[in-house]
Image (cartoon, rainbow, N blue to C red; front, top):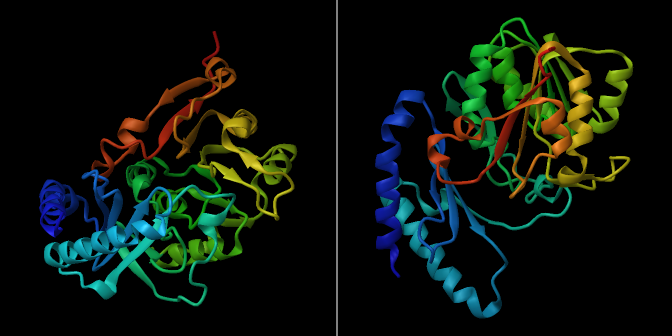
Length: 317
């Protein structure tokens, strides 16, 4: 198969997204999601750069010629459709990760950070240093929701990564506490605040084991109006006292978060864990509503990129 098929699909997808991108001022978006079985890749566009993720298991030596042909075809198609040359195309292998491997530097010396627009926000991204770029594109609708629904609220963002959701809430008038175990990502998050004309000193950035910090906050009777909980599917970082498994641990994390919510508060819980199901303890104890449909943006439709829920206290009878 030559580059014509992949080129035609990119052109078709780009046409479908044109009005959505223009209306919402979006520079970073997914353009291809394993649409053609022979090309099991994900392709994201970041302004004048492209990130191409090869999905699945690593190919054997016998399959290397196939990969070489695929890569050449994709390079040619992206150059023709987006006018993005080969040197601005970033190929990566996305496969099942262990622990926090997706957050470890792939190219520690890479300092090639640049900004992308997501009206009214701007975010720093780096397409070479890590497997992920610093911006989860699929949380775009949630960022817009936070912008419009957080005025004068106290917001807690757990496992905040580079704090793009925190930026959205703060831009919407919230006082935000962001917690992550990585000093690198917290610093990145503060840079995102500055980039969006927000003063980081007016908000809280806490480097901590999130599970341990939850316990301390509960003991201190700290309360929030809105909590964002988007944990990794699994983590066995040496900086955590215990490993984290989302299927096993989500009931405890959710119940701890609910202890810190004001009576009318809302917990937004999301996960990228495939085939995830909320434990019946949670669905029976709280008012739970799945919101995956509206939190998955148009460029990710027809994918199971994440599942998302709002969780509230049940109304008193």
